[in-house]
Image (cartoon, rainbow, N blue to C red):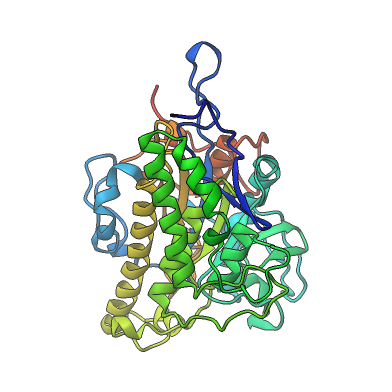
Length: 433
């Protein structure tokens, strides 16, 4: 028999473990007064890639809805109706004679220029953290910072700037950068926060083993569609556990050795963990650095053995540009994977993708020139029905990137008239009534 209704905060518990559940039809009704729909929560995600993009094969030729995805964006063909490509935006506070990579990342979400001395941590609150201050009270984690490479805060990475400026996109205050978590096991522990007591010797057990009884009892009370959702969710959790090498469930026990991961597998595992974090409403605000700005990672699995940053200074060399294009397309393919996982999760009257806003891009346009105008930006998801999608939107040249951030903050419930160097809202994104 189907249960009456469950709280959105219902947990599966066992032996000190608490496991959050995804949205279910049996949870607190998504209808309130007189059948008025209760909207699903909106999520904000920022996905950043380093070292610029090969813009001629990123930028659509046509404007509006009747455009073709160019070569770099072609992996997103199945999601064309769910995204908008935005060209013409600029981050002019990142301009300067040196340290172009550090300023690109530092300014991207803060709209604030770092000090020219570069060594001290002095910036501004990033837009994701402004959103977290507003919606974070509804979730266990105000925000989540994810990485594809370890974050560095000490030392100098891009003369004259501290490594914090090339590896931290989120800043909770003017002096507090938030390093991204690049270890999937640590990210898993952060999302699920499993801290059992008295389980010595069982640290390699799955968290699902400890909530099995309650899960079985709950499923017996649910309708068929909710039982399927629970089963799909538990399967996803167990799959992620397997891929991170069965994470330790308590920091007081010895942690098993890290499971070796190649870079594509790491990014996809981090994407899956992001989806679980949103699916369980552990957080609604996420930043994801696919790689640190100034990254010189090679991509041997793509037959690209040169360092990414070295290649970005291509000097118009055709062979180097071809390799940059290959790296750019690989990153977009990982975005497509993330969007597909979000679209596969049903929530209320739509999907996680429908209720999300995922901005993807870079603070440099052409990595060879370190220019910060006409930035490569796209926006995926419908923002709970508030965003127009399926278009190439060409903005007035030099329109501040912060206009986009202010528009997204507005949709996350942040009420302020300006942010950074913004000049207003990007009203062209508004869904038509």
